Amino acid sequence: MTTDQYSVLGKAPTAEELKELASNDMHLTIEGLNAGYGKMEILHDFNLYASKGQSVCLIGPNGAGKSTILHSVYGFSNIFSGTITVDGKDITKLSSAEKLKSVGVAYILQDNSVFPDMTVEENLLMGGYIKDNTNESYEEAEKIFEKYDHLKKRRNHPAKVLSGGERRLLEISRALVMKPSVLLVDEPSIGLEPRYIKMVFEILGDLQKNENKTIILVEQNAKKGLEFADVGYVLTSGKVVLAGKGDDLLYNDAVGRLFLGG
Ligand SMILES: Nc1ncnc2c1ncn2[C@@H]1O[C@H](COP(=O)(O)OP(=O)(O)OP(=O)(O)O)[C@@H](O)[C@H]1O
Ligand SMILES: [Mg+2]
Image 1 (cartoon, rainbow, N blue to C red):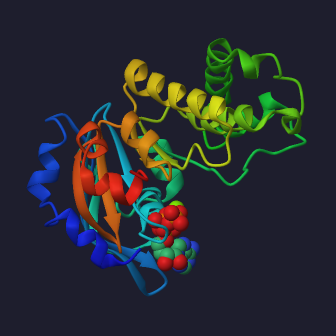
Image 2: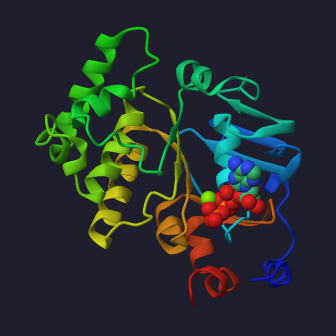
């Protein structure tokens, strides 16, 4: 796919237009972000606005910079300029640990980050490793077991016995031990069978609706991502080329042709 193809998507949305897709209760903002790796700039003047309890899905071709956005919020990339805030607090220069601890930004790893020989419970408690009070981690882990029977049944089993879907559930749950308010989720459905994809989106939906978590999601499966999310951003070559309500993008002709195989 060439960049030209995206010109059909029209003029890039302005920061004001993006802001209108969020409600007044702003939670996470990214403004004028130029970021990348080493000296290479991947994101160019990128803006994003998410209100409290809102979900935003980033879609776009391989290499567009979707993961780099999550990396920038969490502190895994080089930020050249721009500002990232959570609840009005400037977090641009905080370390990842500080972000997790002070403003509750959690990044859900998708790179098979479960420790196979540790038990499910031990894996879960690892999520709270930077907490000063380990009792709190135990309490949170207990709450998670109450909620997810799949994990409870296997709490004393080594994590390597989990199925792919259960493993993804453990990865998500581990981030929850820190009681984050913002979840950064990179391709939660990748490599999963359909029934587990459904489960993962149900869990994310539960966290958004019942626990008011703000979710920034990257999803290769654009249909699933846009069906799930309140708002979608289409990214190409480090820039937003189109944004809208998830449902509107789902029925947008150009998005359909480019990303939904329609
Ligand atoms: N750690 C890194 N060091 C250097 N360059 C990187 C690094 N991670 C990504 N890149 C480069 O940054 C660009 C954007 O990558 P990114 O991973 O953000 O894309 P993406 O939209 O998530 O793509 P995909 O859909 O394939 O996951 C790519 O050109 C990639 O090669
Ligand atoms: Mg990626």
